[in-house]
Amino acid sequence: MKIKSAEFVVSNSEVEKCPKNNLPEYAFIGRSNVGKSSLINMLTDRKSLAKTSGRPGKTQLINHFIINEDWYLVDLPGYGYARVSKSSKQKFQKFITNYFEQRQQLVSAFVLVDVRHKPQPIDLEFMQYLGESEIPFGIIFTKADKLKPKAIERQVDEYCKELLKFWEELPPYFITSSSKSIGKDDVLEFIATTNEE
Ligand code: GTP
Ligand code: MG
Image (cartoon, rainbow, N blue to C red; front, side, top):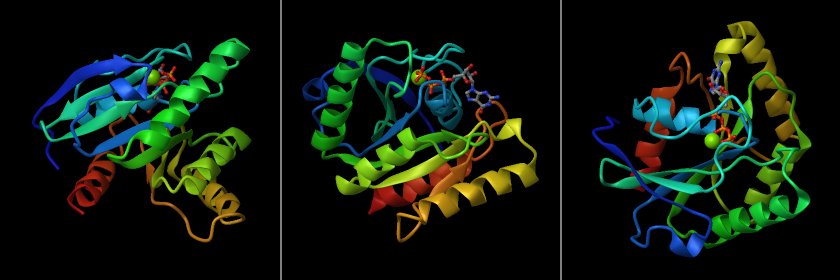
């Protein structure tokens, strides 16, 4: 799929205020600093469409970007950022779960995990939550530029083994690097096919 246009639309903390039209959308979720905003920039070939930072906790709101005037990419805040207070953690959880539970036009979520890390309970639990809520999702392994191909293969195999302990089948998954522009076509192709259904 070719990205002809990509524009920021709106940021907010309430799902009720998200765009009202029924265009299909795809949302990026995962731990703080895993590379959600960077991935959106990579997919759209725009350097700073979504704001990124070396410090975790950069994205704080639900951000809608309209692509080809036809569908949305949604950048979400990260979970599991230790330095936020307990009450802001709870607030975060509420608006994120509201988003996932109320957003009918969400075609698929993408759960991002750092390819260097072993499966983390917080990510596995979030995937479990999506599964129980019947929200389709794919997994995106990020920062593939940080490992050699053999090591990536090992990490992904190990992750899949862990998933198969409690899932009957694997979700679609993608290996990406935003700094080296790896995996872009695979993710866009997945979006193009699910968008047409
Ligand atoms: P929050 O909004 O805080 O939840 O973070 P995020 O998941 O949106 O992460 P963001 O895209 O802001 O990136 C976090 C840091 O990781 C930045 O320093 C990025 O430059 C870096 N980063 C993101 N993607 C990659 C990648 O593919 N490779 C490498 N090497 N670094 C990356
Ligand atoms: Mg971000």
